[in-house]
Image 1 (cartoon, rainbow, N blue to C red):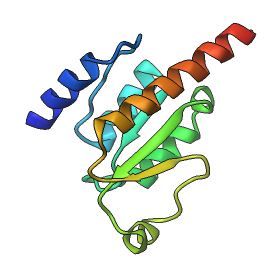
Image 2: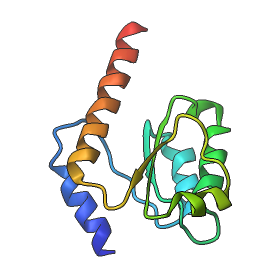
Image 3: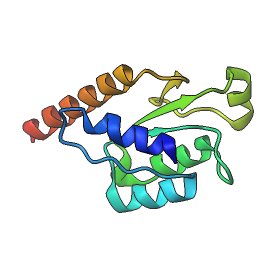
Image 4: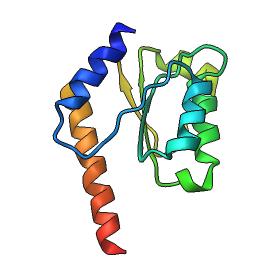
Length: 121
């Protein structure tokens, strides 16, 4: 739980119009995706019950989630990831530990892309 408090503290420092939702497992994450329909998802692959690749595949099957950016942050080696299955195209994979500066950059890019898309409509 300490990690979640650190995430909330760090994300709160970003000057972005965002809300942070934290899930402790893939089941909870999928329920939150259905409820909040986020524009950006950070996930691990190594989770209990449902691994991250299966969760990602479920998310990308949801029509309203087709434009959602998914970022995997994992400590797994490529050969271990391959045993779980292929990571879908368009999903960014970053090694742990990920500097919060990298998270901030991804957040800003996502907000800018979303703002640009909204301005075009």
